[in-house]
Image (cartoon, rainbow, N blue to C red; front, side, top):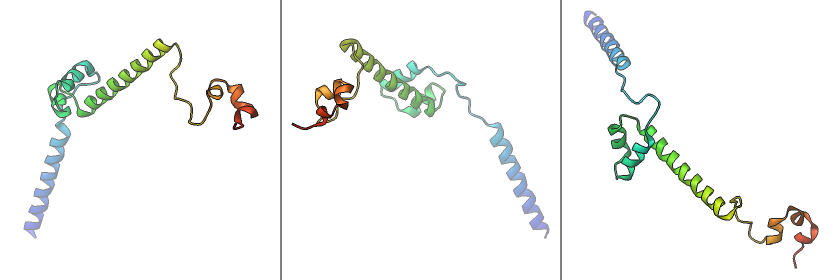
Amino acid sequence: MVIKKIAVAAASAMLVATMVFAASARPAFAAAKVDCDAVMNELNSGKHQKDVAADLNTTVYQVRKCKRLAKEAAKASTKTSLQAKTGKDVTAPPAAGSSPAAASSPAAAASPAAKAKP
């Protein structure tokens, strides 16, 4: 009976100690801003995401976010450079089987003659 009380008291004390240490031990990471240029330089030099996060005192999530943002920026700049070269919006090519006249003119696409096959 006494041993059971001591065991319960010891287990409770260990639980409380674990909760206190877990609540007070917070890792120190960058608050809000991460230097994505530095992250991309590190990634381009061949380091792994975990190593970059540890070196720059940030999280792996932030490293992945910078990588995604850099990919989106590269895609946007490619799209913009194509628009500058052609002077037109870059859109998907017309569907297979459609005529160029039907793709270029909405009126031609709506007319019954454009839908008729030769």
